[in-house]
Amino acid sequence: MNTFLPHPDFAKSAETLDTRRLGKQRVEAWQILLALTEDGRGWRTHPATVMWCGHEYQLAAYGVAVCDEWIARGYKDSLRERFVVFMTGWRGTRRAPSWLGDERFHRAMQSNLLRKDEAHYRPHFGDVPDDMPYLWGNVPDHRTTLLRSWIKERHLLPGAVAGYARRFSAATPFPHLLLRDLLLPGRIAELEAALDRVAFERKESDLFSLWQSGDLAGSRDAFLRVFIGFLGSDDLRSYLEAIIGTRLAPRAVDCAATRYDDGDHLLCHDDRLEGRKLAYILYLGESFTAKDGGALCLLSSNRDGTPCEVVTRYPPRRNSLAIFLVSPTSHHTVSENVGGKRRVAVSGWFHG
Amino acid sequence: MGEPRAVILRIVKRNAVSPSGRDGGRGGAKGGAVSLDPRLREPQALAALRTAFRRDGAIAISGALTAASLRALHAATSRGFTRTFVPDRYSYGAMPLHADMGGIVSFVESITGSSSKMSGLGAIPAGSVARFGHGDYTLLHDNLPVAPAHRIVAFVVIDDWDASSGGDIVWTRDGETLLRLSIMKNILYVIREEKGSRAFVKYVNHRAGRTSFRLILLS
Image (cartoon, rainbow over the protein chains, first blue to last red):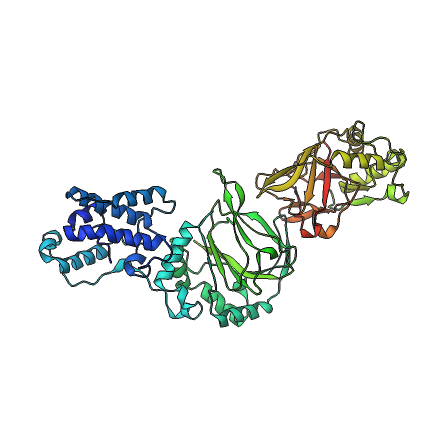
């Protein structure tokens, strides 16, 4: 299971491949595409799959290139049309992966092809050694000590991160994701206990009625200082970047606690303010049902960017993290709390 | 709004007007002019209102309309509202105002000393009727113009309302609340907007149930 890219250019890579390997590449590229885009498909955690996560359009383009070369060599093909249909219907990013064009990555590919068929590939790759390991697109492993001390490990597996990245970019009405049951039980309980010690101030405006803490980064509470350290860590930033496919600024994160009592609400807005890149809400306390209100509601937008209607709702669930990219169309609300429960969360923005 | 406070003049309440009013049920909105309680036109009352408006820039006259006029306005605005909804700007029911409010407008002009066209209330245009129920609001959207100096807003509320349900009308400038008005039945508000201020209607929460209130904006 692999895709072979001895060169940055897909067509040139396809031209270079031996015919046996070229024919199999059509099938393997299609299998990886299915693993990335259809729930329940196998190979999702394989490094060859993970390296294409968030770059599905480019993988399909690679599939077309190998099919074209296969047909040019006089063989019949039934897969090219599938790749083309996928590309036509694709609504996500067309961004190229960061490893494409990285000389180290392509030399490693050439080295591995040399091990498979020295006679065919040596004229193509000159003096490239034949003992280099696969680089697998430099897929990072997020199972660091820090992240494992806060986040349940199942959320950190490469396959899980790949799946989250796919869901994030494909989500409607704008890129977002809800990670359920995220933190370790002890951590979420400690955080709730710490927030019990925080003072909340009443906030009222045309847009909202709610209770809010001060900036938690300035808290003297020992646990909250540890929590803010985790939020601002390079490890968490790298994890989130792998999901959202874009860079965040180091150690630039706002954090405050909010509480919505009966009748409290937050009306439609887009969160845009200079520097804000990724909004997050970590829900604490009692979980809500749909009839309790307090839901994060995401709205679709017209072509001119005017918000239209709520198309996605997430009732608050304890220990869930909602994230979304801040943009001119990231219109959202918090529906009125009507169930008499207290909706408690920590929220803010990662800057970029 | 020289000073950001509303003065409630209880001229009519003090005199305990009966529900039928002095006009004996005449002077309704449908097919006739909407009438003020005639005691408001007495020289002493008018002088007090002018003084209060000059001083405070905001007056509230409870029991302003005759009972018959109020009944007629209720009937004339009982149906025909169209929902006006842009999520990041406003949500309310709107209908054009057909009643003859000429007498009320003249009265307001005699208090303010201005015959200029009156202004809308935030996102709600002058000369219209707005109905607010659960989930309704208006917001201070970026495109909502700020008030120039001495702009007058005048409107009548024709429904009872529980203040815990929201719906307050608020003027702000640079994040500071200048004036907050409560919704009360048969109250006429006359406001001179402060330069640079903007108004919104606070979100109506679930405690309103199925009830709503109607504002009649003069023009």
